[in-house]
Length: 188
Image 1 (tube, rainbow, N blue to C red):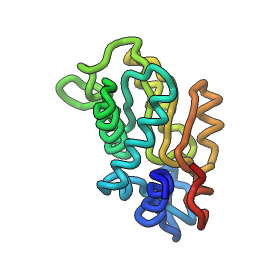
Image 2 (image 1 turned 90 degrees about the vertical axis):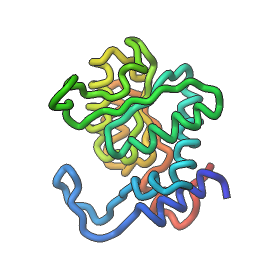
Image 3 (image 1 turned 180 degrees about the horizontal axis):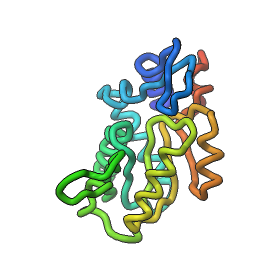
Image 4 (image 1 turned 30 degrees about the horizontal axis):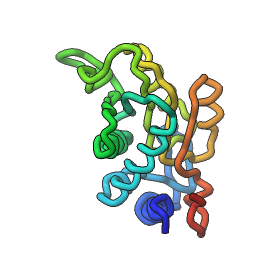
């Protein structure tokens, strides 16, 4: 079994549920994917970080990765750790859902490791419409970062790719809902 197949197996086991669920948008769904169950599992976190790092490395000169807290937190941390093990100095940043209400009132944590014009990638655990990822990219751009793309662990296939790409961002997902619902492992 490849590392990607193993990660998919963990996602299927720990993160995918069928039933009646209300999504953040308020829409109803017959299934729910809680990727944090996988990305907070030691093996799942390790594999997700390694696979995401390899995808990001192939995008060219990426200097930092970030994403919206909480879903992206384990992905961001695991990815920069894999980069470090490969002697790649890749920095991390986390984007708040709302600016901090005290102290510096910032949207982004980790800014002392960033500089204007840095090439960055936004990481997401699960994308549905893509709106959260686009908002994260826009916040990063307001801080002077150059967003080279958005990389998701899972695309629910509900318009995220189209929305993200029509907003001018490159988009890559490790898996899609089709992979998750398939009885066979994803192709490498």
